[in-house]
Length: 247
Ligand code: ADE
Image (cartoon, rainbow, N blue to C red):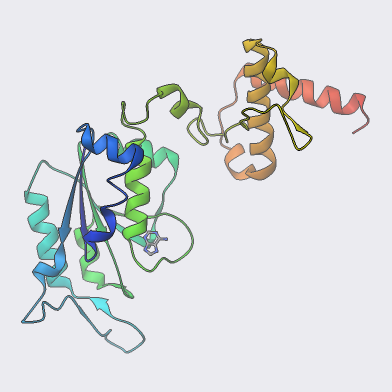
C-alpha cells in the first residue's frame, strides 16, 4: 500500500516510520510512505501558505491555491487514491473504517496546521477524518495514527495475524487482559485458569473477560457488537453465578 502525506512538517514523520513494526513494514515493501512538503507550493519569495482569516479572529488559515495545487500534483503521481483531510470535523476513525482504508492500494493524507483550511480547500478532499473529539495542534499526529492503525491490517505487517484478529475492537469488543511471568508478583496472582493448559477453558475465560470489560467500560460499542451463541451461554453462566452468590 502506498500512503502519500502532504504536510508542512515532513521531518517529524521520519523517526516514527523508521522504527519497530512500521519501520519493518516499510523496509519489507509492505507500505510505501511518500512525504510531500507543500511549502514548495507557497506563494512569493517567502513561499507563503497561510494568511489571516477574513472577518478577523485568531491564528492563520491555509490559503487555497498552494495546498490545492500540491494535492492535484500528488494525485497525478500514482494510481487513483482518495484524498483524506485530517481535521477535527472529520468522520471519527474507528477500527471498521481502518479496515476499509486498508483495502485501498493508495491513500493521500493531508495534514492541517494553524486555525484550519480555507473552506474552499475542503472540495478537494474525498472525505475528512478525525482521530477523536479533541483538537490537536495539527494533522500530523493524526496522520501517523491512521498510518499505524491501517498498516496493522496489511497482512505481513504484524508478525502474528491471530494477534491482530484478537486485538481490541477488531471483532467489535475489547481485548482480554494479558499476563506473563511471574505468576505471583507482589501478591497479585495470575488467574489459575490461564496456567492449567486447557485451551478450551482459557478461550472461554478470555472471551468472558472481553465481553464483560466491553459491557462495563464501553457500553456504546457493546451495543453494536456481534455476539454468537456461546457468548450468550457465557452471559447466562455469569448471571447464574451472580444470582447464586446473591450479587
Ligand atoms: N487536526 C487537529 N485535530 C485533529 C483531530 N482530532 N483529528 C484529526 N486531525 C486533527
